[in-house]
Image (cartoon, rainbow, N blue to C red; front, top):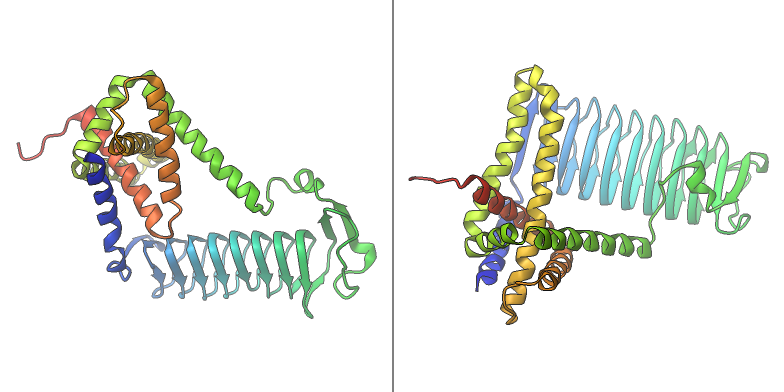
Length: 371
């Protein structure tokens, strides 16, 4: 069936990743470096500002400015002179950070930070000194370094190493104030302030370590929002959504490559406009358009995938709003769960989104090639 072709398309899109692990895309603009790929590595010339994303990434060459890093596994071995913004499941920063650091992940280990440190994780370990204040939220925290400024701390379990010291105030946010023992060598009692856990939101803002229940709740909420958007689109504009669904399921390969071309054209136009100088003012609008197009493609892809799965199970194509809502819900849940598969999941979601974009472009523009 058509949905089998779509499934085959997604599987073949993910299959070459093992062969492409050694490849990466590198772009230089002035002294800034942009790296992306399965296992990208910044290992040669130094970069002023570094933008790197992938599944497993490594930074082993110096960065004289700011570093932006995102991936499943992130390992930064070299020094970073400016600020660091990083998010990963496993995040290790062994080099020295000259500026501020904003970090988020599941397991984080960080060396010295010259400025302020903001980090949230399930497991967090700080092995080097912090030159400014530190804002730390974790389930398990190991502190084995000095914090020059104030330390805002919310954690279920804290291990103070021999080098742990807080020169400013130590503000503890506890479920039951007084339960966490603080050695006098870390901070004397007159500089320790104990507060209720709920005060964290008021004092610090929404920068807390998420529990598994909260993570699950947000995941379910995300699925519900996607299902609602897809269901509403199918109910309010049934004819166009049916046409997009047919186009995607009947010609998934064509939808995928047209979607790739269409999204590339939108994103690429932003950089071409930026080259004109004055056109750089339009870059945010172009990036917003690209994001909205990607979201629309994802909604169309989710709906088409749900319809295809139900059709494979013997159900007729939807003609009533209840059937369309069911297809949207099935598609949202199935795609959301498949997206959780390590490495292959995000490639599947990307391919589905691009196929949805291709269906939109084909329906709206009706491109003809080699005619």
